[in-house]
Length: 170
Image 1: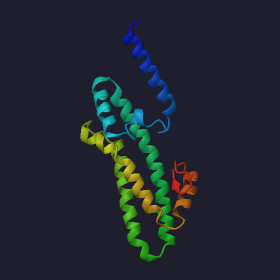
Image 2 (image 1 turned 60 degrees about the vertical axis):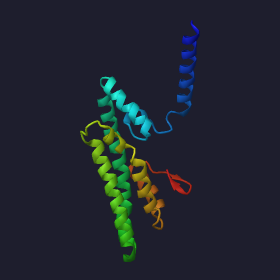
Image 3 (image 1 turned 45 degrees about the vertical axis):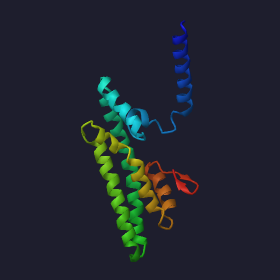
Image 4 (image 1 turned 45 degrees about the horizontal axis):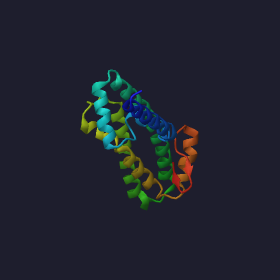
């Protein structure tokens, strides 16, 4: 084996060990579904879509599966919002309206994932916005008393992904 091929083999083995150690932390969403990625990853994804036959269908299938998961989470939050509307005083209506706007952004994101959007840099960049959409919605939800614990309870009943992780929802 030449020094160069040995070096490549060593590098590949090192990468595989890193992937084995790290992979799965995202719930296996980043590689195949295009979400939970950074902007550099999106450029690689776009190149891969151009080069690898069938990769676009794999991406679209993964995005549809992810959309279904996100819709379950969204439904759990909407259940909590309905509970809040019944229990909160009227002076918190403005905050609830703002939360509803964030949930509409969440819904729009899910609709986008299910659509036959054109594979462009701009459309792929939209995929990385979800972490901000999710964070903004959950931050607003935490402003309401008992909403976080209610969400965790509803999530367990509805099969949503929310779990209590101390002070935050994971």
